[in-house]
Length: 235
Image 1 (cartoon, rainbow, N blue to C red):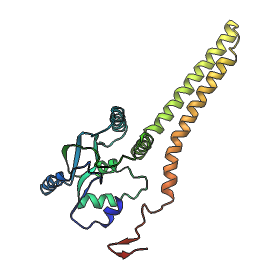
Image 2: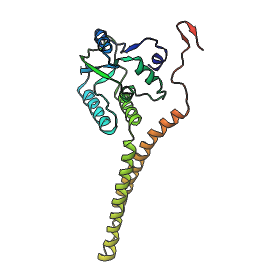
Image 3: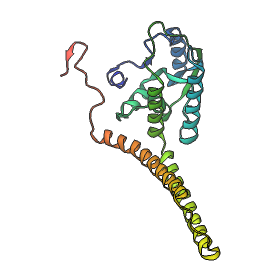
Image 4: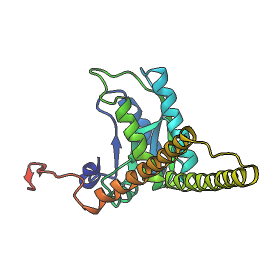
């Protein structure tokens, strides 16, 4: 998609899936709104086509979590099917990161937007390569690309655990010195150790997700390599 942005020469471009779930019949309507002055004419799915009930619910839940945690408005049930004006294309060309959650990028750049509602059909042929694991990875990418709330969550969780642990320690001390009760042994100790270990691993995992993206971006590798363009050899 980024290669398309870089090499497209027209005043506008249309992005759509190749599996015919995005109906080409909407393109004339998109062009009509573009001629009226809209910069980003996007297609809003009224129906998601042939998808399982669980997949639909998880998708909507992801959009809800992302919307609540980020400062930009991320449009639910909106994919890449849209018409973009040259001004939008030039703005997107400046976003060169390799971890590209395009649905968030389209919202982040702003510009004058217009929605078109449509019923998404089923795939014309073949099966989708997006399984639940792939979609979960995409959700993690979207969250880590447009919000730092998970890092703040780890900080708050650490603070809550620290305060709770301090209160529990003071309770044990007072119980031993004032009432002479013995300190509970192995079971309570293991519960505390396992709980703290789980919180630490969760926090490290969240930090690791962000560090992995910093690591990828720090390499400064090109997002794509085009061998030739319109028959002319580039590499």
